[in-house]
Length: 334
Image 1 (cartoon, rainbow, N blue to C red):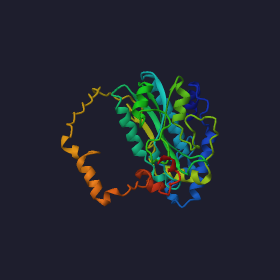
Image 2: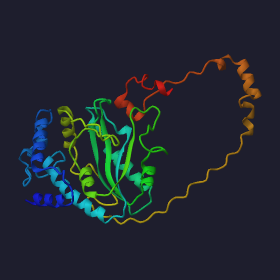
Image 3: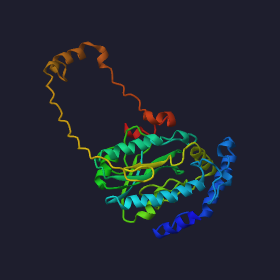
Image 4: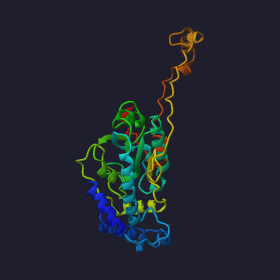
C-alpha cells in the first residue's frame, strides 16, 4: 500500500511514535460509536464505516474521519519537513493560547478558529521578515479536573527564520514573558511557549497530531495527562464533523500544499514621536488644592460623599460563556 511506503519513509526520519493502522481503525470505530449514540443525522457521516487505509467510503472526505486524517497527516509531515529543511534556521516549537479562546463544555462549536489564525498571522507579520515560515495546527483539549470545566484552545506550530526574543515579543500580550494574566478581571491565563528544537521530525509529527488528548501544561511535563471521557470525545467528533478537511491547518509563508511563497520585504515602520502637550494653565484653578476646587468642596454637600468603587466584572469576551459570580475569586485583586 502507498500508506505503508510512506510510513517506512517517516520512520527513517526518526519519528517513532507515529500511529499504526490498527490505532487508526480503533479511533475510527470509537468515533462512529460516539456519533451513532448522539442526536446527529446519520446522513452527515454516512460511508465512514467503509473507510479503510486503502479505500475511501465517501466521495468527499471529512475532517472527522480518522483514516482520512491519517492519510493527510502522512502527506503533511513529509511536505512540511521538506519545506522546513529549506527554510533558514533556527527552528522553534511555539504554543500560543489565549484566555478568551476558551469555551465551556457543550459549546466547542463556537471555538475561535478564525480568530486564532488571524492573531497568529498578524503577530508574525510584525516581524517584517519575508523568510519566516510557520506550519502547525489549531488544537483543542479538555481542561484537567482541577481547573474550571472548559476547552483549552491553542495554536501549536513550528516557526523557522525568527529569533526567540522576536517571537516572544510579537506573540506576548505584555512586555514580560511566560505565564501571564493579561487582564485584571480575566478568568484564565494566556500561555506562550517558545522552545528551540534541533530534531525536526518528532516535533513536526507531534504538531500535526489530530488526536484528542488531555491538556498538557507547557512547562509541567511531569503532570500526567488525563484521558478525555466519552462525553468530551463525542463533542469533539461533532465539532470536527462541521469542519472541512485541513480546516485546522496553520500556514504562514507557504500555501496549504507547503510550497514556499515569495513575499516582498517590507520596511519596518518608524515609530511616531509623541507630540508634546501644552501645559494646561487654564485649568490651574481646578487642580487639587486650587481656590475654585476648595470652594466647591466647602459649599457643595454632594461632593463630600464617599466615592463608590464600581463592582468588578469579567472580561466581556468571556462573560457570555463563563458569566457567573466570581466576587470571591477576584477579591484579592481589589
